[in-house]
Image (cartoon, one colour):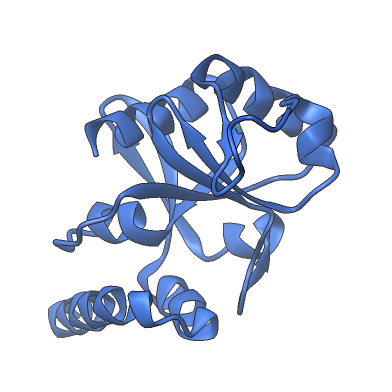
Length: 161
């Protein structure tokens, strides 16, 4: 987990346009949720793709589930030719999502995110209601626990109001 937070800090320090979604966002909202990867939604502008590639290249990214003996070239043009990527890196698994099911692209998520300070780095997190929409739209069995945590967090926030 610590290494994945370091990855978030690296993206923030490089001024990458991204929003943390998934398990780390749930934890960022105060939920006790165990996750083994970092999920981010990212802006697909050329400049941002180059920043992402600059951050990830030293971490030796490789597509998850692909045989290590197969050749793979990672650079910003690789990112330009796809939308959603699942990488294994030296810091852990990092998923780059150009589109989030149920919500849309980076620009669609911006209005549904909030900015937090993560050890001195400004970082955007997807809001609790938007995380619920995304997890429900994904419809995966593995998201059921995360949804329960999110419902409880949403209820706690509603009780405070």
